[in-house]
Each structure stands twice: as C-alpha cells, then as structure tokens.
Image 1: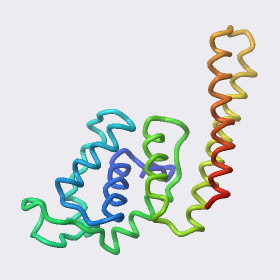
Image 2 (image 1 turned 30 degrees about the vertical axis):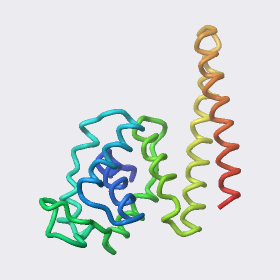
Image 3 (image 1 turned 90 degrees about the horizontal axis):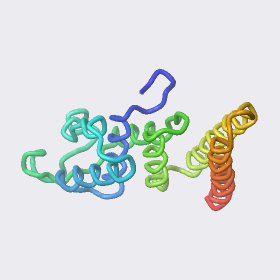
Image 4 (image 1 turned 90 degrees about the vertical axis):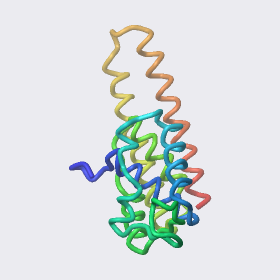
Amino acid sequence: MFADNTLTPKEAVRLCALGTIANAPMRYSDLAGSVRHFCSRVMGPSLDLMGLSIELLRYEGLVDAVDGKGMEDDALLAISDSGRRELRALLTAKLRPSSDLSKLLIALKFRFLHLLEKKDKLGQMDMLLDLCDSELARLEDLREASTGEGIALHAWLDHDIALLKQRLEWLEEFRKGL
C-alpha cells in the first residue's frame, strides 16, 4: 500500500484475482485471462497492472490448488482463508482522488461488493460518498477561483460538477438498497 493506506496498481490486480476466485474456483489460465481482461477494459493496457504473478498468490498462501500441483498444469485454484482476509483488507482500503487507478479500484469494489458483510458494504458506500463529496468541493472551489480563466474551463468544470452531483445521488440511492 501507499503511505496513505491506498492501494498500489499491483494490489489492484491482487484484489481482482482474489475477488474473482472468491466467487468460484477457477483454472489458472482462466483466472489470468479474466484479470487481464477486466483490468485492461477499465484502465487500458498497463504493464504496471500485469506485473503481478498469480503464482505469487499461491506462494503467499492466498490461493490453493484444488486439483493439480500448480500453475504449470493449469490447476483449479480456490481462495484460502488467508486469501479471504487479504481480500477483505484490499476491498476495504481507502481510495485516492480520481485517477485511472481509482476508477479501476471503484469498479473492483462494486464487482466484489457482494463478498462483504453488510456493515462493510455500508462503510464502502460511505467512503465513496465522502470521496465524491471531496472531489465535488475541490472542483467547485476551482470553479469559483477561476473567474477570469475563460468559458472553456468553466464549461468543463460545470460538466464535471454536474456528473459528480449525479454520482452522489446515485450512490445515495444505491446505499439505501443495501
């Protein structure tokens, strides 16, 4: 993790892999393809994201081979108890303000939200609401401070501000349904 307890790109891949096999055991080759597909569709291709070896998850005891001996024979992998603890820690980690990595991490949080208990789900929604609120305040402050900057910047900021307000409403409604 970064110093502010937010996830690194490699931890985002770890979260994706652990969450994927927490849903159901999966063959190594299928897991690697699934992780690569999901991460690259959210963020685009990135060497930073693909640097994590799924074999490392097995070495660290986060996944177990259900059949076969390991990655070399395309073993069926399942998440271990320590893997579930690691998954929870990754799923409940803080987020940094908006970035491509944050977008991936938010998508992963929603993808695997069903794996958390209700109190953790609500906590994650509260964190996302706070993050969105902070980003909205930051952009509104920038909008107010940029009075002499011209119409293009204001139009862009107004657009982003409207999206954030819409996102806040959506998150509040989603949270109510949990």
